[in-house]
Length: 190
Image 1 (cartoon, one colour):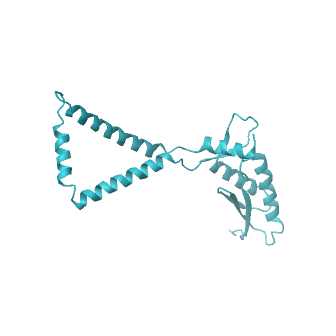
Image 2 (cartoon, rainbow, N blue to C red):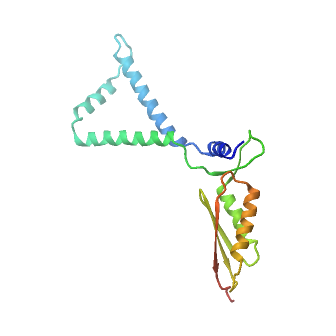
């Protein structure tokens, strides 16, 4: 499977769906459908269903329709409905990083937090690093290391090489650009 095709498949598989806004819209549409059904059945001649309370609610809204508060509430309800529909239709941000797989029918992923901790641990294992942190964005992996060394020398290059090597082993479908920052900090004397 080509790299671009694999990336699209992995992103599609691991992209979360926004089920809460979709559920709210579905419930609101179901309520509106039930109310419409009740009104339709109640308006047929000889129907046993009486929609007196619904008629009173419709009459109350019709009497107050020109009121600015009613119009504002209606506009707000329409706007909220459109926002919820938009959120329900568009997928959310992916929570997993898709990884390359030899099997084209399988999709493999790792959480962003696990990938971040793994890369921080890799950087922390480099000699001369006392502490490491990593941030994983869409296109970039930022690694910040702290060292007690006065002259860090080639520490940045060694950390970059270690992270790049382990990133290659991890094999994300979209490989982030690695950026390493070295900070010198004196060890505490107790």
